[in-house]
Length: 142
Image (cartoon, rainbow, N blue to C red; front, side, top):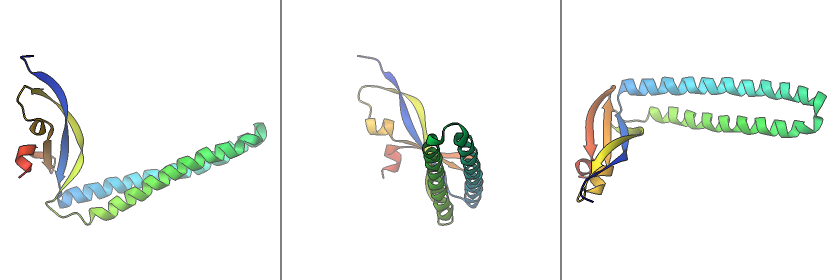
């Protein structure tokens, strides 16, 4: 094979921590927690409605229905606990540090002899919604 090959590769997205970033993250997490509280209330309402319906039509199904709703509630309670922990950790973030925000994909051309680690090790660093650095593994392996 003489030509190159086009592949998709992961790109790690990092955010440089600023006071503004910390405030925005805290607000987002608080809003998500409120949404989860609302969902938990809705689940409580649903279980009452479902039980009332099943008492008339299928009393044997009440236990299974309650279990399904309790499982959903448990998932949300766990997620809420994780968010609460994240909220606590925001205050501990050092200004200027970098945190992983997520991963994207990019398309790149590879050829025989290319350094695989350099191709796959790409990071984008953002600060205040601006890209401030694009790093390859050879740049940040120092």
